[in-house]
Length: 119
Length: 116
Image (cartoon, rainbow over all chains, first blue to last red; front, side, top):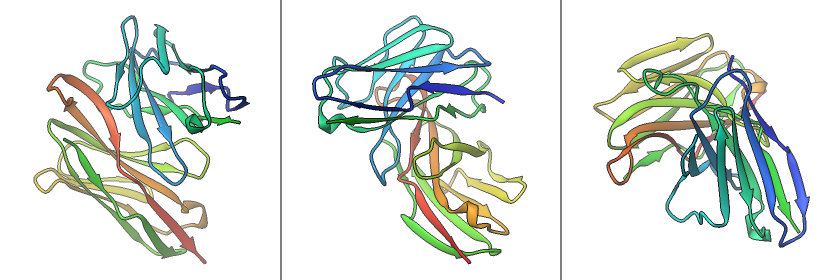
C-alpha cells in the first residue's frame, strides 16, 4: 500500500531555532500533501495544503511566514517552522493522497509524525 | 462552514460490539473517512463512505446517511488493542471561498477504552 515517510520523528531544540520537517511519498506521486498539527488529546488541525509547483494554501489563522511550505517535487514536501517558540511545540503530521482527478475515494495516508519540543 | 461532532470518550468490554457515531455539516460533501489513532502515533485508515449504506471490512463496518449528515463506525469482537482514538473525517469539494479543495477535515475524535 501507499507509504508516506516523515522525518525527523522527534526534534528538541532551543527557542528561536528554525526546524525543517520532510514528508515523502515513497511509492506514489502526490501532487497534493497536507500538513496537520495535533496538540495533546486533541484532533488533527489542518494547517495548510501543499501543492506541487505552486504556493501552499494556508488555513485561517495559520501564519504562512511562520510555517514555510515547499513542495518542490511530486514526492517531497517540507514544512519549516521558523524561529520556533515553546508554543509551537506540537505533533506535526503530513499526509498525502495518490493522484488527483478520479481518485477522490483514495484515502489520505499519513506519515508517522514529528514531535516538536521547543525549550 | 464545516462542523463534525463525535462523542469524546467511550468504554466497551472485550468481545463486545461498539458503535461510534459522527454527525457532520458541510458543503460539497465528497466522502467520509474513519481513521484509528493510537497515542503518539499517526492515524491509520479504516474505512471510506461516499454513498449511503454500509461498508464492511472484517471486524469494522462504517455506515453513511448523507441526508442525515450521519455516519457510524461499528467495531465487532472488540480486542484490547482496539483501545485508541477513532477519528471521523469529512472531505469537502468546496473550500470556504467556494473554490475546489478536497481537503480532509477531522472531528475531535472518540477515545475508546476496551476493558477486560
